[in-house]
Length: 123
Image (cartoon, rainbow, N blue to C red; front, side, top):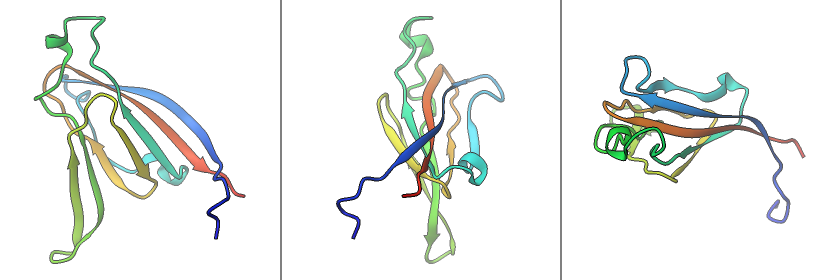
């Protein structure tokens, strides 16, 4: 029983991603983070950029975005279950190292996200 033990986590990398409606900049398609070198990641949906232009120009709301995850198996078909989340500013996603996921394409505006890769330290 480790209920009283603290879990030590080491931050490996932190970065901000930007998606626009431009080709090859609108999504990060299906992938696993860190190529097996991380234990997981945290993704924070950042606010719409109101500093470089009006919100109605920079907002992607209603024009795609969000996250899709493929996890586990759907019993009848034997395929991974596809789960879609429509993220909003401030939402957090904790993603395990083995979970396939993607940042869904946007067709308008700019989408920002803070990403943190981490490793659980050996005790």
